[in-house]
Image 1 (cartoon, rainbow, N blue to C red):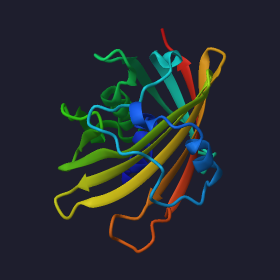
Image 2: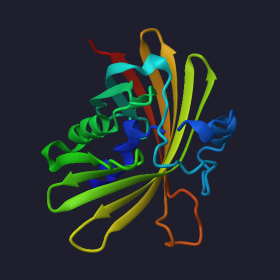
Image 3: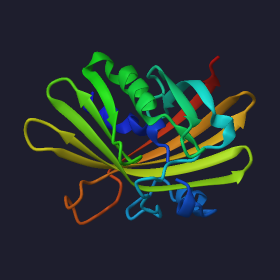
Length: 219
């Protein structure tokens, strides 16, 4: 359960800044290096006010179907996702809503709730049963729009699972490529988990996953 939550919680939360993070071509090059990923990744560190700015065709509420291509026989993960305009007029993901929807689909009532840091768009806390909570902080982010109908985003997050004992750390990078397919949005995601900071002398990915997503608009 813990592993699935770590690997997929950011699946839609991924979702990755504007401003200095715009630089065409870097993410396609990163994708070409898959699955031989290692750190450091070419992702600028976001400020507290930075967020992923989505194209206008993301606006609204969506039904998301996510398939783990590493486990094609597993049933798809179904959840909702919402994208809306923030106070600065930017179209962003509703991170709390999206993370809660994914968490409920994965963990059911084991997830008690998701809290956003009011001072940062890059930090969330998911509270779990058993006196556990998962702290997720975005440490790197980049986005690109190579065409009007294509959008790429990459995020690196540090996740800390706080337990009654020693906390457990994990670094996860997720690169997503979205494109319009009729009224739907189709996407692929490439995800890598890296060793804990200071755990080894190498920063090569210790595991990799691929996902296929379909987002269908809801009324």
